[in-house]
Image (cartoon, rainbow, N blue to C red; front, side, top):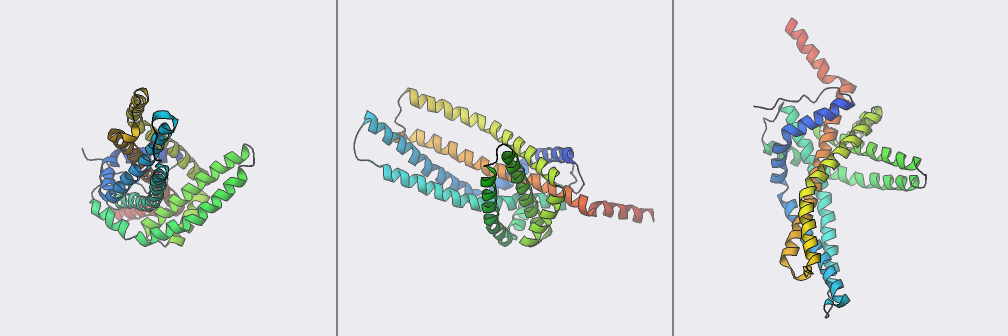
Length: 313
């Protein structure tokens, strides 16, 4: 049975936005996952390389520490292992910045095409073309996020000195900023706006509906985190059992290819799921954008009234 189209351009309250998000996710998770895997190939390979370097470094350091405490002696390779760790961390940071912008754009483009085609009747290449056409704006958007986050960290640092009240204020500002950034980016992507214009539109929509925006990002952020945790249970149990086996049998993890492979794949899966969860968070703010935009401008509602009037004539 074909999935029923979920109309997005409707002024929805807090509870309806939550319901629509999960209904949209249920219908589109398979198709979007295919889009995600199709266009993240180079990043997934990069995350695998990053995982290998970091695991090799940490495992080597553990093995080196075991040698110091009596399991062996010889020339230290500590500098080499630190090089692996630092190189892996640097590559991860670069990939994370690239992936953040790309997948924010990819998930936004998917939602835009879903709205344009009134359902899933579009090809993944259309999502790619829309994403590719906004590379310049996406890059500039990410650059502007740097001073925004620097300012947020300064404010968070100041609020940290205020007992209890400062903590609540910090969380409110954090989720408000997350909503502003997500809604602004989606405004830019869906309406072909410039970066500054997108930030301005997002600011107006979020500020005028502040508590709804904060609440949606808080609740769905919490639920997405819970979903992320549930997905990680199985691989975490497998890695936990293997680690117990390593400790119980005094396995030399530094010289074990199997250990390196298992821990590398485990870390790689974690990083990929983190990237995927980021995509889901942008779906949240895309759906929030449509609800706030319709509440503010009533474009879809007026269009339907006009259609009824034309039919009556």
